[in-house]
Image 1 (cartoon, helix red, strand yellow):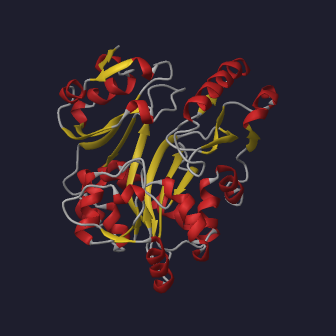
Image 2 (image 1 turned 120 degrees about the horizontal axis):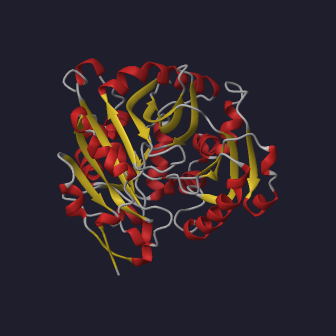
Length: 389
């Protein structure tokens, strides 16, 4: 069963749903979708009734915008409590204290940010909305002197982004301050099957242009990433599953892995895989349809899948703008020029920058010998693709 919601449903996801004839909740977003084949719609009461009758079910949502509906209508499933436990970063940290007692964190109301005695907090630290999305409002503070500038940026960003998403997705009323987790950053699409076993469907490595960069510009997946980290990540998910009983539960997790190979979760996003349907890169890279794998309880045969992937990286390039770029001054973004700068772009997906604050994203395949394409776009402010008013 599936719930579709704003802001975005990819053609790949629509094709998957229609081909599989998965029951879809009939809401405003789903009812407005254009598809070649008919969607299998259920009215709200039918959708809820079917879940009650099934007893055990697999429910996926492409968007956290649907979390409010789940909370209001599916309390009998126990899902709202699990969603709140993971989506609220403060509650998530409290849960993980049993595994990571050494990690510092503190919740603070937005209106009380100016009262923070920053000199008393060990640095570097990260500050971000307690309920957040897409690195919105995320900042790293390394010195006392940086705090005034970071606080000013947070206030400006709150004014800009506070109406973009529902409070279940992005709530800028409360922030979390937490110790900086050292190591390389990764993102994982996975699910717990009906027996409670964690199944990893993809692992992305998140790379940055500098020490202070916290943007989502580039992620990549590869044979090396999967083979190096999959078993350790499965072990972490087993630990989380021991703390909270999870079955038929899709998730997108962000984490860091240190030089000592110790894994520490940053956040765990429930009921979905990578946002804005960026999870689709698993199909371009490995032939894995993450929606189908979850809904049909499939497990990847990684040995076979990775056999011919040597020397290749599959990249997700987010076309997010720098903080100092006023989107109101943008006349047009040159997507064709962007595509021409890559040897093997796989798919481009555009976004309304005026509405969503970024220009879209792209999947591209890179040979190791041509990694310069990624290094260049990683450091770009995208102005070479923008015509201003």
